[in-house]
Structures are given as C-alpha cells and as structure tokens.
Length: 349
Image (cartoon, rainbow, N blue to C red; front, side, top):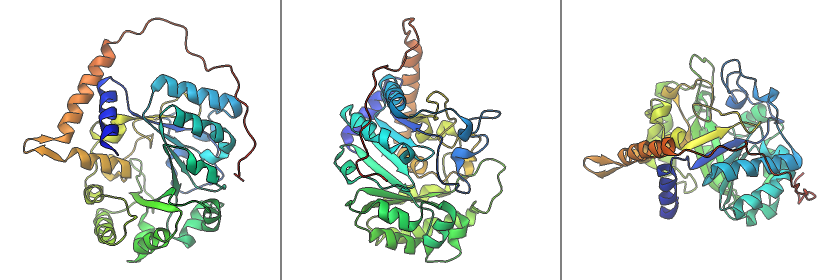
C-alpha cells in the first residue's frame, strides 16, 4: 500500500467511516467446498437465513444497487466475494470499469471456474485473487469443478495479474515439502503476481480435520519463513507470518475487522463481527489480512508509541465524529431506476 493510500484511509477513519467494504455479490457458487464459512449455518447470525436462502440480485438491478451502496458508503477499497462473483461475470463487466472510474480499489476473489477476460487486465485499480486449496490432488477433490486444469485455462493469457491465495489446513502438513511445492508450482506461472497463505479459521466449538494444533501453527510459521527466503512471489512480511501464532484476541482488537464492513448478497444484511460471520474463534484466527494488519499495529514508531496506539486514537475520534453528525431526515435512498445495458460477453465462458 502506498503512503498516500495509507493517509487517505486514515482520513476516512477520522471522519467516522470504514475505509474498506466487502460485498458478497451473489449467493450462488458452483462449488461445495468443505469448511466454507460463507455457507455456514450461522454466517449471518443465529436464526438468520443461510446465504443460499438469502435473496440476491442480477442484471441491471444488481449493477444499480451495488453502485448505490458504493456511493453511500464511499469505501476506498472494495472486496467482491460471494458465492463466486464470476457467476455474475456479465454484471462485473459493467461494474469493474465503473468502480475504477469512481476511484475505488477493487479486489475480486474467485475460484476461477470461468475464464477471466484478458481485457480486465487493463482496468485500473483492479486486483484478482484466485483461491486454491493446496496441490492439485487435494484441491481438485475439494473444489471441483474449479480444478487445477480449469484454473489454468481460466487465467491463461494474463501476465502477473493474479494473487494466489491458499488456506492451510492440517491435512497439508503431513508432508514437509507440501507448502514449498505449492509455492514452487504457482511461482513458475507467468500469470501469477503474488502468493498468500491463510490458516483455516474455525467457529467456536467447531471440531474438524481442517483445524491446526498450536504446534502445527508453529510449524507453518517455520516453513513459510524458510520459503520466503527464496520465493520472491510469497508476498508476506516476516512479521505477518509470525502473527499466525498470536492473532488478535477479539474483533475489537482486530484492525481488519474494525476497518472493514461486510454486506451480504441482499445488499443490506451485515456480516459481523468480521467477514467470517457467526462466532469465529479469534484465538485460532488465520486470516492473512487480520494478521498482516495486526503486525502493522505492533510496529513501534517510538519506544513508547506503536502504530496501534494511533489507530486506537483515530477510531475513537472517528466514532465521536460519527455520533456528532445529525443527518437530515429524508426518504430512504433508492437505487437508480436508470437501467444499464449489459454488454455481450468479452471472453468469459
């Protein structure tokens, strides 16, 4: 992140707004991945509908409603998640350029089950993250139809366009070279710009084979630090990697949760306390964004002053500003009724 972007985000916090927004743009996904938090029964809260049962939008209405949310909340950074956003690829062909024109940095997170148009590489401020669950044999079992073969076909023709994101589960740690083999494979792909790892984050009380033990977390840190010594595309600072051992203790201490609002597919339901929803076990958090920003807050500016102290003061000031504002009474805002004609596909399949 550039210094100018950090300053801009800080100004947004001081004005009482969150600089980042995540939108679950669709309830639909062709995958049925084990452990997917978005489709957990309590993702939207106890007794709330499952994401697959939530109403969502498509076509011109989806475009208009998303832009209305953006104009209201004015995020600096937007993550488009799902479901899988490529289910709505025709709408994205309108939305992505328009978000760029509005100056919004957009990150699209997908399984790459569908071809990603080469023309998208020309859209300023757009980054695309492809989720990959381990090496080919394990990934293909978990994430069919978004197999390795399908992903490689979907990203073909791009140059350093994609971030590869892998969530580490305990099953990946029984072979000592597993993570290094993963990094070697994706580092060799010309389409890949960087590689990120998270660790599987369970809900409280959850007991599954995906969960790492404390000893396994220590081993992940050791392996990633060793890989980082030679793999230039592993884009994780040592402090962020070490942060997997001691993540933020609660959402109130998590800078990522405090700076990011998450809205579900009906474009009104809030996902709390963070993007995982439900009741995440923060003591076992493995979110790369969470540990990365938490590591930043631990950086000392002076012997007695950490970056986190400035964040805390900024949040308190922003909350005061937000409470002080008295918006005029008006009719609830409605999305524009002006329709946008969706274009034919530009190469997505």
